Amino acid sequence: DWSRYAGAYTDYNQSLPDLHTFTGDHYRSIMLTLMRLHAKGYRRPGLVIESGRNERLDRRHSSAFQAYTEDQGAKTPPVPPLIAPEISQALFAQWFRRHKPDVVLCHATNVLDWMEACGARLPEKHGFVCLNLAFKTRPCAGLDMQPDLIGARGIEFVIAQLHRNERGVPTSPTRTTIRSVWVDGPTVRA
Image (cartoon, rainbow, N blue to C red; front, top):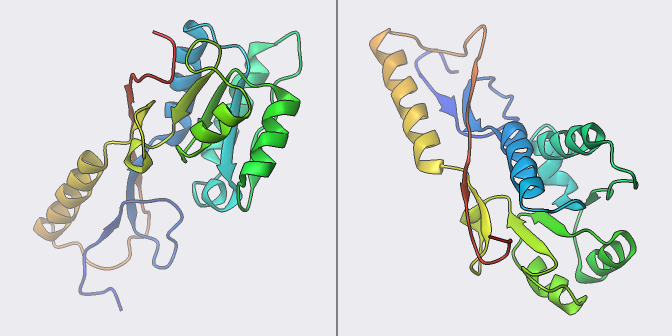
């Protein structure tokens, strides 16, 4: 019974109850990242993401990636995304060797070790971008999803609901997205 409460989510796909949402702008962030990587000379980006995470984010990563690669009109087929329930080193190595991406976008920075095991030379020949630097375990380029700002906006909204005496599940929940910030790092060309 939410009739006495005001609330908001700071993530995607929370539907019970269907509250207002504050989250990262994953789609636009991927598009801007791919444009930045293209300007740095990368032409064969590859996306690596667990299917559960992709689904939880309403497929915003894979949708942006697909839209970008289709818009590029490349002379060679684009690198198909590696989307699987679990990404193992063996699965990654098979995909990396077969499709030869020159830059990999992924949440897990252990993929850097796997790239190097496949012969990747970072950043001279290949690149790596962490899709959420909160997950990084070693220095790399990537996206700061601005979790503090997302949380602050959510808190501001809940306070505003309390001031307006708004309680319960909203009839028309809104979604506010915050664009991530690019952070340079040693895994992409200058």
